[in-house]
Length: 500
Image 1 (cartoon, rainbow, N blue to C red):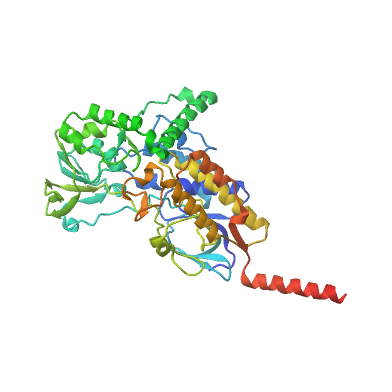
Image 2 (spheres, rainbow, N blue to C red; image 1 turned 45 degrees about the vertical axis):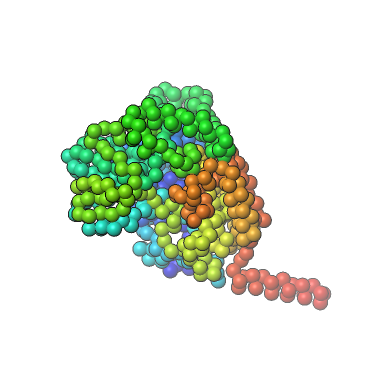
């Protein structure tokens, strides 16, 4: 263990980690190290390689404000986003800060020295501050289905796609119909002999206006700015409807019309029609998913997969589907930190969050000094692009670290009453939005009945709140020994003055 800790350690070299290094260096923090367990940068866009993988936010909004890109289409593919992230990292010298193949296993706050001790696969390291940039979509969720572990063929999660398995002429069972399945089912349908899809909950699906962006467009800043603004305000208009559910019927009508135009079979259309309000779960856009489900070699089972016996996947309604391959499109443990994290009193963050998952502005957690989550709970609205939220968070984090350094402090910790007040206000605002209308189910609800994912206001308000840094929201301190020494020197100086 080194006695000279690193100033800031960033954990994860995905979209958030790359942005963190750039923001910190611009603010004069040069002693920054990124610990990345994989051999290459890219985060979720590196890990998710399933067919058809892409972004469901317009590409012009899915970029750093300081690094505009000449996107080829309105919605970017996974490969183009990955290339963009890696090129941006290389252009800004981020790669020099990354230590690849180093997985963080545990992080503990040392209340005496005011530093974090990180136990990693490459040894132990200490640091003054930690930015957890592992992202909310890190740990795939594997369903507990009796008999699945004994299935005689290949089984894999969509987030860990097995490209060694050839699906040509095979019977493929897909369990789950979330955003990933909506993208890959149309891709595998033409090559598979049969595709059987188990759907526990239907999705609202909007048309996807995925048009080409001609290269000359990007050479005209004004035109590009206008189109980007159009995308931004379209997203914000949808967000306004989600915050005021009484305004949703026109948008729900568009989704229903899209379903009716794509699926002519009344029974299939009924099975695909959600029973909850639009926006209560993740918004999905696709022009290919519905048509794929109408193909002769595809069958939808509007039920959850309840068990597996041999090659048969059996639904809760008793239906059976014969399978050679099973693909799990069952989502993620959203927001889970992928290593053990212990705060000032030795309590694990995972244990704290088992009963109460909250963070001040989705960034700081009381009792975990000098720790920042990028991004943390309740930061997304369903229409806010991740880069926008991350850059706003980094503005807040950088100002906190500058205040820490300028004031001669060694730790900052958000005041519990400030965190609680923010959480109470946020949850109260969520109650009137559509986000809380899906019976407490879906990944918006990280705890029973508690929405731990959504931001209940506009993107503009999110950015303003994060950029208006308030030092009084935090407790600022120095190590106990240093504080005692400073107090002693102060008293001695006072006594000396009185004697004179």
